Image (cartoon, rainbow, N blue to C red; front, side, top):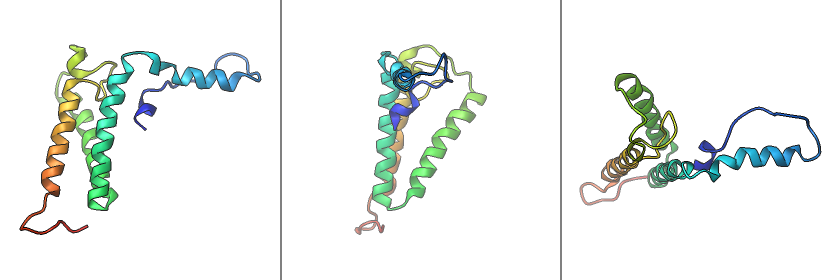
Length: 130
């Protein structure tokens, strides 16, 4: 699923013939050939793993939905409150607006994973109910 965020979007261009479907498919996946796409895919993969662990450990999809909504809200509202610049690329990630392809995003995923692990840990000597 992380790759879906990186593939191209756009309309149909040119005449339609028997090979148009192949040409369109190749054009959609072409952005993955750029080296700048892979840090974003890696960051989204990490976040996807955190969301999957949240779902598997809690037995509920709502925790994952809440985590994802929190990430989207932080990105959307954070860009309104703070002047996020596209440089340095190693910190914020390639592309604009930045997704999660830089060190800051990866650290954010790590913090999210740590908070989730602390929230999921057993308390009082027993296992957390599912």
